[in-house]
Amino acid sequence: MTDHHDHLETRNPAEREADLFHRLPDILRKALDAPAYAERFKGFDPASITSREALAALPILRKSELSTLQKAALPFGGFIADAPGSFGRLFTSPGPIFEAEPASTDPWRSARGLFAAGFRRGDIVLNTFGYHLTPGGFIMDSGARALGCAVIPAGPGNTEQQLELIEAYRPRAFCGTPDFLKILLDAAAAAGRDASSIKRALVSGAAFPKSLQEEFQSRGIDAYQAYATADLGFIAYETSAREGLVVNEDIIVEIVRPGTGDPVAEGEVGEIVVTTLDPHHPFIRLALGDLTAAMPGLSPCGRTNMRIKGWMGRADQATKVKGMFVRPEQVAEIGRRHPELGRLRLSVEREDETDKMTLLAECAAVSGDLAAAVTATLQSVTKLKGTVALVEPGTLPNDGKVIADERSYG
Image 1 (cartoon, rainbow, N blue to C red):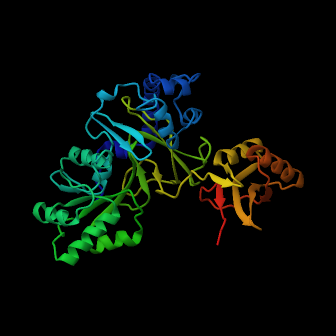
Image 2 (tube, one colour; image 1 turned 60 degrees about the vertical axis):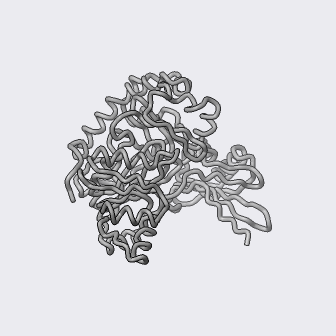
Image 3 (cartoon, rainbow, N blue to C red; image 1 turned 90 degrees about the vertical axis):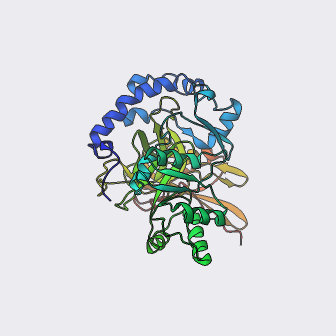
């Protein structure tokens, strides 16, 4: 399965990059019509934001902040200029976070990921993502219908009724969590029901280990995963190459050091930051709080966009030490004050019934004076006493962890 949704997926990477950053200034001008973006980007000229380096100078918008910001200026926190009534659908996700669906075909950019998973025109799709208040069901539904599929809007649960639907409509494709697909297949086997029509699946919303992928294959189902959020829709999706996830078209993905907006080197684990090129509902440098790493080279499937390793944990590692929160942003500030340091990792342990924190810092030229200076900075920034251990470059693991809570309370 090596065919592609359209020519955009196989264009020269430099051509794609030039196109994205040619379009970005107009998107930024549209974003500035919204009061919250106008305030955040004060002093920036949209015409100058034509490269990744220029984009990285804009402030980060953290998804974890959206609920508070929206409550202060309902419904969208001042980040959308267009009236709520101009959208196709309006949703709420846990937080609560309020989301708007543009009134367009495939507004969540999911068709590409579904196509890569083998969904084709004329397929019947059993969609078990929820349709109630949250956008999950509609994200898959709109993409499948854009491909020319017929969709059964099943939603989650009601296993017995879903088995009846499967036997009646004989869907070829499934959308939902991998866990629920297994529940359906196990229930069908236990009840002697026929679910053999399902041959393709696009799963998301939960871990999809290789063992479960292989179990589905043994049952005649090729299942692929996607990385998507309720705010942005499809960000990246798995292809027949089974080598990471290919980033979607019409978005810009950055991977930054947790607690900062600073891009990391290719292969280094960091936080996912996304900019969308949707003039109706632009997101500019939305930091999702999830960790991943960029993969080198191009996918053997022929798609030429950036690849990521998939979800690798959470970047929001705020930890309470002696009753006070220590945040990744504070660890990053220590690094800014001491540019001679490399990768940093704050380890929090429990010793003699007391919290103890140690800042591990990679450094090419270790000295007692530097350790003392960093120790003073650690206390100044966090308002807590801790120790500093300077270690050789390459000593700390490349796992995106800035704060490691190693405490055990027995």
